Amino acid sequence: MSEPCYDIAHLGHVELLSNRFEESLDFFTRVYGLKESGRQGDSVYLRAWDDYEFHTLKLTRSETTGIGHVAYRASSEAALMRRVAAIKASRFKSIGWVEGDLGHGKAFRFEDPFGHVFEIYWDTKVYEPAPEDASALKNLASRYHAQGASPRRLDHVNLLAEDVTEFRAFMETCLGSRVTEMIALDNGRLGGCWFTVNNKTYDLACTEEHGGGQGRFHHVTYATDQREDILRAADIFLENGVHIETGPHKHAIQGTFFLYVWEPAGNRVELANAGARLILAPDWKPVVWTETDRKKGQAWGLKTIETFHTHGTPPVEKDQ
Image (cartoon, rainbow, N blue to C red; front, side, top):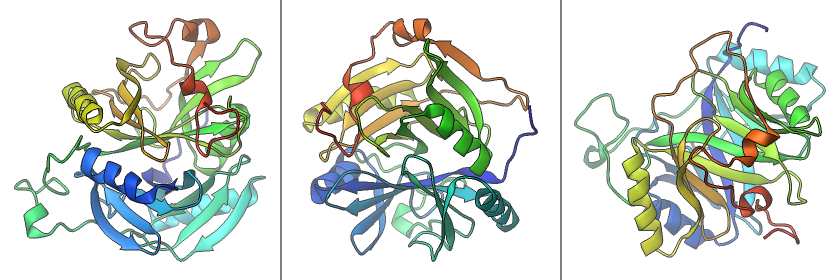
């Protein structure tokens, strides 16, 4: 294998679109437990209590739902320029430089073959808590506020694509990502790939589109400290009338303890706990799951619910 590339530091933020904006904002703040750090135009900027950046979720008012863009932070200015050069030299679409956002400086935008927009930036705005939001511990970004489910940090995003093999080439070429686990279908296609740019098990997943859409969003995930936080969150969602799609349970792939819900506009949102699992081996070889493996269900035998394969945003006519 080629030497691992660490030009990209981590997943920075995700922009999510909502056509029921006020209801979505209420969910993400009061129920899910993110904190608002700013507003600009049709967007509200949100973060979990230990996210160091100004925002990790940009919620934007829209006539549709789904993903606006996915943003990664580079590991340095020089690394950003290396990635830009690699993207421009590739067969994938470059959009160009944008002035940045409320939470970061200039960013270079590009697009995967399925219409998802990505950006990479270096200059960022570190969150500076007000005195009442500051933690007693100097090494935390802000205090634990116990509002709603209160996840700790952004973890990953999952996108849908008609050809996961092509998406894999995009991620490896443009971001220098490594594949940690994948699904090999009996028909020779890839059913899914899990990617990392650092030593997390994954920061982005891509699974095959079965709902008939293009450039769609599957889910965004925030991490909790422990499994008990997810069990508590399930009760919070239940009491607030949130649609619980599946879980709490444990994934076979990546081993995360999970809970999936739909926020009011229909975008899928997850809470997950990965435990202490990290990818430390520089020569890690992707774990390959077969179609037979996947038919066994999740780690403890729970069968994957049908909507998990077909529901994405924005919806399509035959989406359930």
